[in-house]
Image (tube, rainbow, N blue to C red; front, side, top):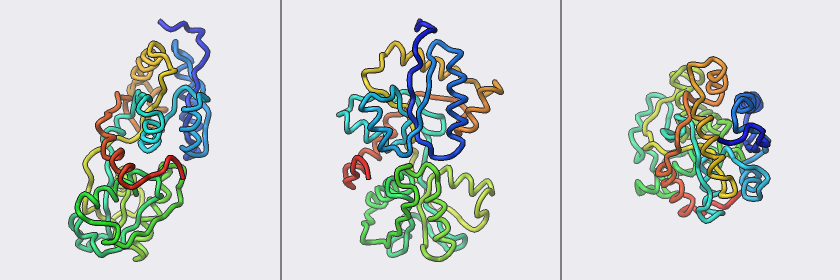
Length: 274
């Protein structure tokens, strides 16, 4: 067992919205009652977070899928994905248009105007282009509108996705690519209800994951994971944290789910940072 007096390990995350502080204060309080206490530090963007993990400033990084892939490539595969949210292993990209416009499948995008989220957003830019390319639709076959309002956040705030949706509603674009979480907000009637419809959804892939380097001992990592996986939706104190972070339970990562993004990063020449 890891001694209870162990100095807290430091987890890095990105401050992509105000409730991030509340989430990590809750996580810190939860782990204070375990044998694997943690503290946290917040970064303004994922490039800085990846640098901090590789440089040893933090012990763990709460990474988006692009940040994980960038870490994987910069460490030549030495990093480890430890855990994800249940919602992270079933993530999707969704192509949408104005309701009633008759779009049907990716081929409908050919020759039309497509709004993409920030260029470092896997769900709203990088993977949508990958899916178009796999369908035989090149960048020259569509008029791309890139909305880079979230660069550095990897689309986490969803702001660029909402801007892309607004471009469709304002007839500045014919279609847009967004993440499934934004699409679910639409279908729940939280935003733009009835005005937007989906016409293609991607296969499932993996999104966020806790990432560590070999310097983090396997013994501590396994003990910490046991404590993480013990968070219980039925416990009101745990649920308050889980709800804010958008999950019901923590799960092992699905590494196969990063394959499409790894391929897209290579084929599109995505740099280590913008």
